[in-house]
Amino acid sequence: MCFPGQRIKFKVFDQTRPDPSIELVEQACGYIEGAPCDFILTLGGGSAHDLGKGVALLSQTDQSIKAFVGVDKIGHKVLPIVAINTTSGTGSEVTRFAIISDVEEKVKLAIIDDALIPAVSVNDTQALLSMPPSLTGATGMDALTHAIEAYFSVDANALTNAYAVKAMELIGENLINAYMDGTNVLARENMAQAQFMAGVAFSNASLGYVHAIAHQLGGRYHLPHGLCNAVLLPIVIDG
Ligand SMILES: [Fe+2]
Image (cartoon, rainbow, N blue to C red):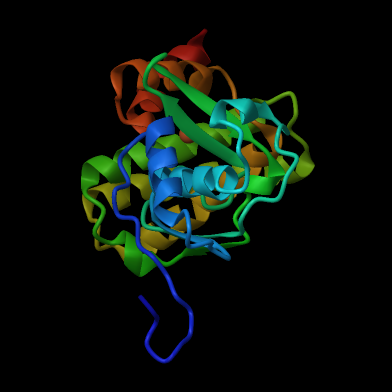
C-alpha cells in the first residue's frame, strides 16, 4: 500500500493483542520479512508500542528476544519507531522499556534500553476520547503508579522528581473527571500530559515493587496491567 500522493510504501499488521508475546513479535517480524522497513509506526496503547519495539529490535538480529532481557543488552541498530498513543497510562510511547510476555514460562520479560525509545511520539487528545471508563481507570492508575514509583526510586533525581510530582498532581485532579466523562477534553488532555511525564520519570528513574509484582500477576493470569497496579499500590505503600 502507499499513502495517497506519497511514495511511502507501508504494510499494516493489525493482529496486536494485549500483553504481546514472544510468538506475536516473531509473527509480526515474519510479516515484514522480505520487505525491509525504514521505520515502524505503532498506533494504540502500550501493547501496540511494546509489540512495535519488539519488531524494531528483532527484525535487525538473528538472536532470540530473550537474549535482550535486562538493562542495556542491545548492542545493535534498531529500527526507528514512531508511536501514536490512543491510551493514557503506559508511557510506552516515550520510554526505553518493552514488556514482552513469555507465555510458556508465564512471566513478563522486560527489555530496557535507550535504543527502544521512540524517535517520535504523538499524544493527540482526540485519539483518547473513545477510551471506555474501565480502560481510562486502569491506564490512569498505571500512570499514577509510574509517577509514585519513579519518585521513590533510589535512581530518582531532581529532573525525574519534577516530572513525577507534576504527573501526580495532574492525575489527582483529572483521572476521576476523565473516568466519569470520557468526552471531557480538558481532563483527557491533562491525563495525556500526566502519563507522558510519568513515562519520562520512570524511564529514567525506573520502577519499584508494585511493577515487579504486577508483571508477575499479569504474566500468570493475564490481568490488565493497570488493574494489577491499582490493587497492589496501597498494599506496597502500607508495607
Ligand atoms: Fe506500568
